[in-house]
Image (cartoon, rainbow, N blue to C red):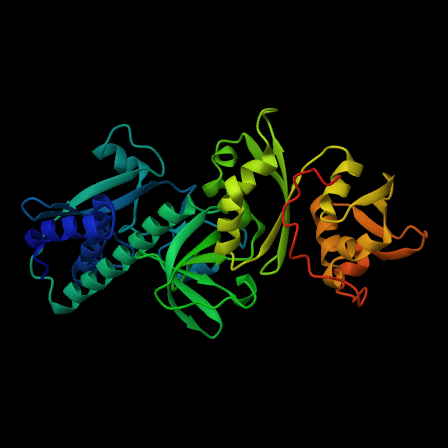
Length: 401
């Protein structure tokens, strides 16, 4: 038999330690006791409810009946009548333990209405027995788990689309498990930065892109490769971004290698690029360090396609840009000594520029021949033996134009 008088302290402990609301736990206990009562003393079709006064442990049990008439139920009494039921008749069979006719309900409650619930008090039983007590215990455990999952979803559901901090719990079969005390997050292999090593107990920041409830619990799906991770990290470092004075208009990222971000200021007195770079580059360096040394190009956003595309190709300098609005394509002419910078290693620079601007970009030399296009670069084609790594010129402050 469950000793309800001792549950008060347990409720307080669960509410404090697991953050599960007291009313949800009480509801779970009441449902479990109703289930135990029905198991030992109830009849088929009955709806049993229980209430508890947690202060003194007093319990009350009720049978619930639904008010119906012949429009809602079939008044059949034997199998022969059941066989004659029309196929399109979706009414349920009348059960006196589950239903009460409207005319009978009005004798109890004069203003009773169809589908209303009428409750009848039942005799309280103390001798539930070992099996019934075990049933109640199992239901309580299940309901508490459900309430805990709900509390986790409520807490982390509001954080979806944000950066959250946790500690590496383990790495198993390529999946990184992150501990958040009350919940566990996972970083799937495709959401991990290539070459990044995760140590047990290490603090880590990740972008929460999905909160899912599964039969095994709540899954917090995290990413270290999502473009929004960069935006969130800059918002932490730059108050101008956090306040909305400076906006990150677009992000193109190849995680672990290089990213480009386009920034815009809503205040003419605030330099958007400088806000992200910080004094002596401290802000952008902090973000790069968090991403394992991933290089970041910061360029000013512009509504003018030619200006925007020219900036996006930084650190290369464009001599001329021909824009085709209909095909959403741009042909960029660069000097011979700028070709390798414009294209980038493996076509990375032009590929990221195209992704950032949303334009197809073709690069050509001063001789007029087309050297490569962003479409080719996106396939990972090797462009030239002379391509160089863009280790320098991580930030374009607009002075190189």
